[in-house]
Image (cartoon, rainbow, N blue to C red):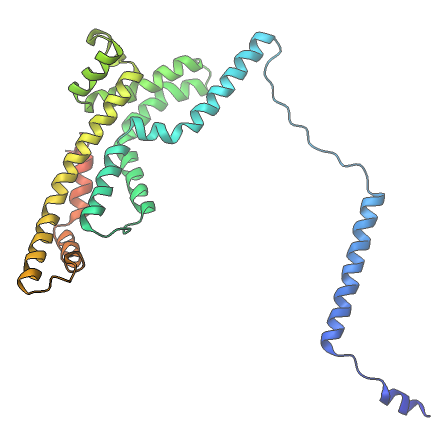
Length: 270
């Protein structure tokens, strides 16, 4: 048997089988390298993390309390945004507007909340700037302590809430907390002022929502009457009235009117 006949009988290696052999060889080499690194590698050095809480016992306790208070404030930040700013009124009005239009999830919740946040930031800019200048910046520069900074930050928000809260709502919580009017004003306790401010904001939001609902209810009634007169009782009036409500809202420049009215309701702008 000649060498040529032997070579002719040897089957060529298929490309797929060749790639499989190559992958197995690479895996074996990588596994061998990893085993060598684990067996002959040097000791691993972890970075140390230290938290300086002071040297004395009293200082350590005070710093621990400050740390707990900071974590608490950060966890309550979304709630504070809702409670002491214009966010409540704006987001409720926008939600009622979406319901009045009958668009269900359009605009979606993300868009509604984002618009409410930016309008809140626009309205609250003077208050936030005053709180930063009088409270946060001196605290960063270590000119005042944490308690003085809290009072300085709370004072602008207290003034904002007092300008918009309804006197009747404030008197209600003053009576329940047994706090006289002489003790309120610019020094009104936050546990009295914040709930009064929130129910005042909800009341105004519902008032604005009622005014927004009226034209769309009229459109629904007109469409329903037309459908009944045509004998089309099985057709849902909402399906027919939705495009008319949308074009009506666009023609009257609804977003311009709603956004402008919300901002001006807080005394911002001319």
